[in-house]
Image (cartoon, rainbow, N blue to C red; front, side):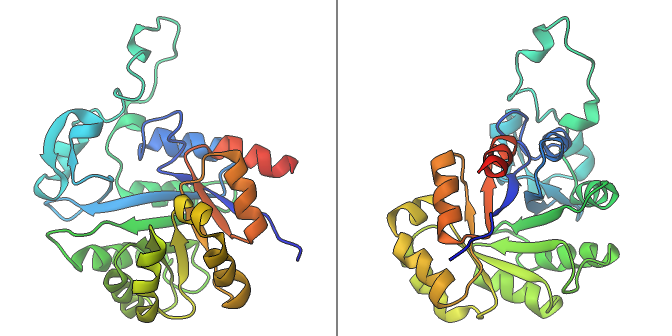
Length: 264
């Protein structure tokens, strides 16, 4: 069967070379040819959606602030990029950068960047759970997407989660949006399968694809499911995904993967 090559999705931006979830990482991913951008979203204490993976900022800024208990202005005052490029301040010949490229990024700013870009770009947005705000995260997300006119069947957006309940909420609020049921293991897939609709995309981890390619092949060839895989950094795994008919690969290395697939 002739397979089309998978879409290349930048995992938290070009996170192999730039601090994850920063505007700088997403700009680098776009410059490298990424066809879609992936982000995680959480709600701040004052109700803003920000692109942050962990519940707190310890890993990326050495600050113990919990995202959901901190207001946006305080998060924006933090440096969340130096941990990735600690050597930059020592390079006298490095160009002066825009400080905004290394700050906590709001989802609104990321959506604006995609809307203004000079070629079509898709977004894969993961809502993080569990959270103190429960379904409010999905509600605020759909409200924001609606401001951009991105809740219809033609929206360049899909919403992802490890929680099928969260994706049910998204579908109630925006029935035409694509949703992605993330799963880490074959056992998780069999547990959630009865609760998801036939048109939902499945998002297995790369470990599951390696260990159980037969399960993934049945998703694609037997059940006609769309499959998006995370996190695919090894080029041999990229080829493995392409051979299985997987539609999208989420990678920290968008430039390398785009180049590889273009040459293949």
